[in-house]
Image (cartoon, rainbow, N blue to C red; front, side, top):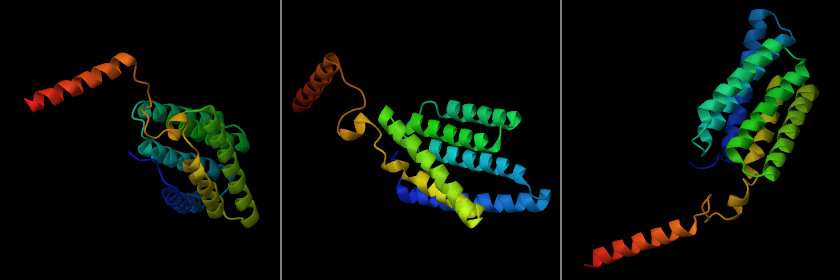
Length: 188
């Protein structure tokens, strides 16, 4: 499976912003407004982005465990009801952790992704405050998040022809011997 692209991230940003604004508007009309409506919208958007990330990761091991751990943490956050800013930071942090576990293999790329996540949060808050539009806030947040595809994954990314693991000398010799035997057998 190929890595996600920036254009794909733009599509995710558009979908998330439209869906988030629609859900917020519907909940506001049904419940009567208030800041308590933002928490389920944030959780739903984070869940949608998590599903997107797990569907697009090239890593096959641990996706179900990561999904269940995120769901457990999200329920814990809802029950604990921390202050709104902490709630928001923890959701962004959980998404960063998932992205780091499944898309990056070095500390430098993980830290670059953390900086990107915090920049995305700042851009989303700034856009929302400046325009008064939740749609634009969500759009800016996910648009900046789409830039994570530009972060190199780690040492393996610098050597695209190299395998992610180092083959030991015996495995290398065994593979060459098998290839030689196949070539010899086919020439008979």
